[in-house]
Length: 175
Image (cartoon, rainbow, N blue to C red; front, top):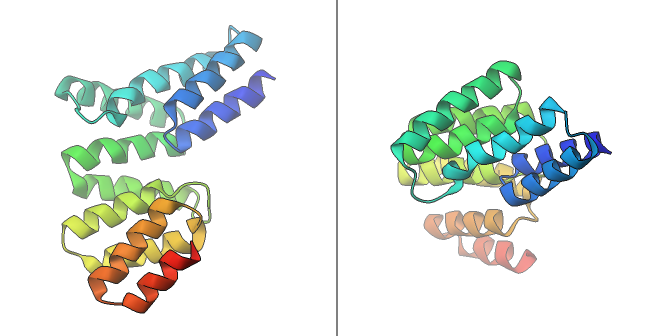
C-alpha cells in the first residue's frame, strides 16, 4: 500500500496539486514510516510550496533551485521537478522556463494528464508576441488535453486574436 500512495503522491506532484500529494505521502508514511522515498516526497511538497505561491521570495527561489537540482541529480527524469523549475523560472526568467516546459513535454509527449506545460509555453510566447508559437502549443494541447477548460480558454483566445471567429465559437461550443 505504501508504494501505491507513493506513486499517487508523485502523480499529484506532476500536476502541481501539492495538497493532495502531501496527503498521499502522509498515507504512504503511515504504511512505511522508514521509507526514504516517502520522506523525499513530503520534502518535495515543502520545496515546491513557495514556487506555487504568488509572491516568491528570492531566498525561497535560490533554495528551491538547489533542492530541485538535487532531485534531478537523483532522478534525471523527475517530470514534476522540471515542471516546478519551469514554474519558478516563469516568474524569474521566462526564456529559461521555456526549456523546462519543453523538457516536461519531452518526458511524456503523449500525456493527456497535464496541460500545465502547454499553458505555460502559450503564456510565455504570447507575452513575447510570438503568436504562432503560442497558437501551435495550444493546438497540440487541444489534441492531448482538450478536456481541460484552461486549454479551451487559451485556444479560444488564440482564435480570437487571429480573428478566426467561427473556430472560436466551435471551440467554445464543443466544450
